[in-house]
Length: 291
Image (cartoon, rainbow, N blue to C red; front, side):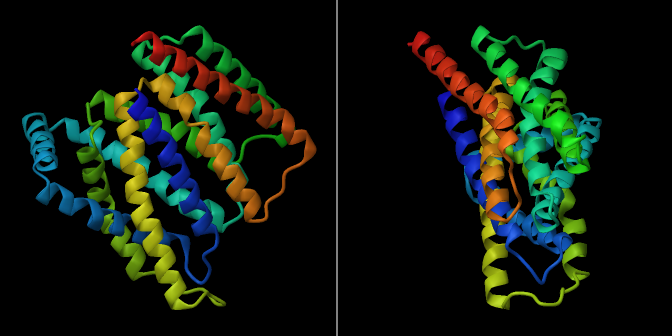
């Protein structure tokens, strides 16, 4: 559990870095950035399954399961499409003024994950986790009331990701090998976006663009491996609650990119931060009780 928590926290920090780098790009369209991220991620992770024996065995085992039960491909295709939408949105949002809406989506996501965990997998919450969920619900509820509704990126995130993880668990596609196949499925679309990319006027120097895109690809591959690794070892409820770290970091990135917060927003974020503190304390007590 401790390894899963650490992996989730590092992944959140890397995702926030990608978000900030994407928002700083100009002279390139978001579909092309998405394409490069997918292709670079595949180029980074694919050799691992050819070189590392343990990873190669993991991939062979997964392919063997699919061969024995071809119907599992249905869940794999659904998961690939769902994660593809999320990867695209993560590039689109900071480049088009939806950074705060995206952070709100990730604030809502853990609540939806908890609900899905209880309904789909009969997971139970400890008393501390229940209180944390209640605090988070207060903060998110305040934001919903004063924001005047949810922007479409918010809904795509808080509804799409739970469906993605349900599809993976139903098919038992929870390994990093499954994620590699999902990226492979997206590769043709990614290549199309790269080849049909249109350079926008007033862009950065080519050298800086290349370095930024390379950073997005490398950090994206590492972040997704850590993120999905955490999802495979943690309960859906704990994993969902830990996801509150990412929206806080995305919120900071959104402010750094020029989007604005107001004094009333404290009523949204303070309860959520308190929920994180309570969750950390609950996890610490649980780890001590296992010794």
